[in-house]
Image (spheres, rainbow, N blue to C red):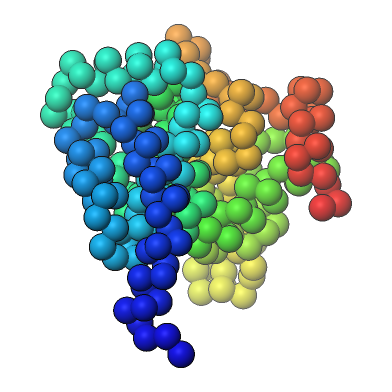
Length: 266
């Protein structure tokens, strides 16, 4: 049986090609080439001294690759130029990005994070939602996050017309992500029963607006939601609404795309 040092060396050697690709993406990225921390990562990629270093570099490479797929060069350059106006803000943002990537416990989370960041770059979501969605990735297992987004679209593909609202599924593992919340009123028959009686009932979970955003972004349906304009938000009916979502029941194109990607019987 190979000893630990030999196994690690074999892993590092097998990872060289992937690391080189990540380094190339990093140095060519319009978003990152002028960021000081990017230079440190470039040096890290040249040494490949440990397995954690290699894994981190691969996660960065996956992040950049997905960003390049989801945005245009003009969008990335425009975002970069805007950030250059405030160096402190820029450095703080990118330091936070790399810290989040380093903490991801699954490679696919880098892909999801890039999708979220792409929406921020293209002004599809606000900074507050970017931060909240990014934090959600570190707050739940990747399999639970995948189940949430696919279940969301299966439900709407079948019978649920609304974007937010009650769900019969158990999303207890996602409460810390704020993608869902608990509806404490739905199971209480009267105020006299008190909180202790609520334990006798199954909890009902509410999908939040943030949860809707995550489902649309994660499954690549970001074209079907938009920010509510300030003028429209001042309307009493839309006072609490930040985003407008199209649904498969209201948009034939979206319905066909959802059915193609996530068949109801899958």
